[in-house]
Length: 213
Image 1 (cartoon, one colour):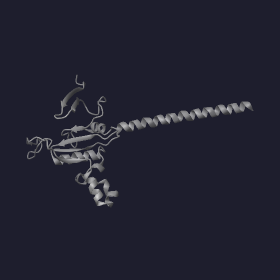
Image 2 (image 1 turned 135 degrees about the vertical axis):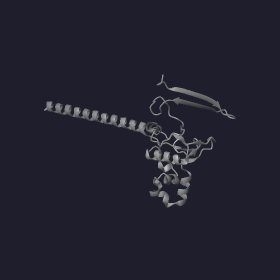
Image 3 (image 1 turned 120 degrees about the vertical axis):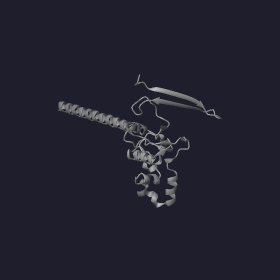
Image 4 (image 1 turned 30 degrees about the vertical axis):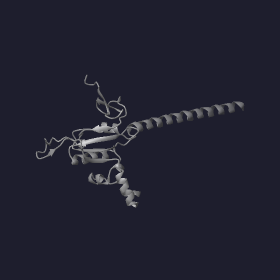
């Protein structure tokens, strides 16, 4: 059945440790399947976020909808494509610009949020803040060595997943917003009931007062 979700699981013991590594994969459209649990981390292998041929909106919205920030890794074939994917993440609101190093923000033509903040008051504090950013882009030390030729640019050579970036997705997206909306709706309905009950009790009191007279 094409609609059936295929699950693969691997249990691997870590040498020199009592810890067991469990890897579970689900073959499905991420963000459309509601049965998956909150992930410990999300990895995209050369997704091409900046390529108009693919639409990652549902998957990225789901990845940034959890109540806590989810770590992620994204690989790209080239550094330029990596910066383009970062631009997509920032523009889509999937990552917090405050967590990106200044040089990356400048490269993807996004103004650093710290330019208008208290960080400019203290250079040393700003440098420390840069070192503590929870985002990186660098060459992938685990990439292969096979050089490939681009199918669209004849003189373009690349190595698959040669670059890797990592960080934290924004938290509290669609899931939390929906919960808040429901809570507000419940609060409003409760308020209306209370108001109607109070009005009803006021009417009864008035009637009783009229009868006594």
